[in-house]
Length: 85
Image 1 (tube, one colour):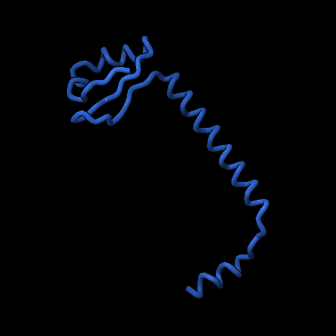
Image 2 (cartoon, rainbow, N blue to C red):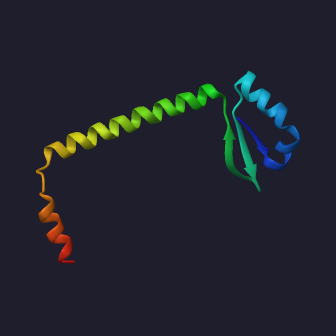
Image 3 (cartoon, rainbow, N blue to C red):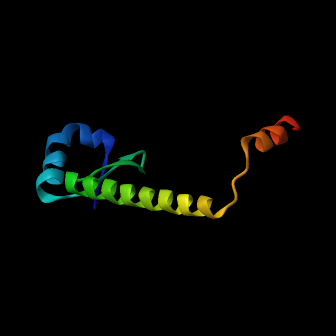
């Protein structure tokens, strides 16, 4: 993985983007020595988004299964409890 300062990136943007696009190089952008962003090939981004989507579906499925196992509380009961606070 390559690291490059954002100031240097300004002068080398075309070359850096070409290396990311054609060589699949991942580039970490730094500001004052601290990593602040990254340039990655589109294939990496698509994979990351697919993994994120799958993870969120798994979380939703788990939440739905957990809620199905718990007894339902009527809204009136919840509202009455909140009104007492």
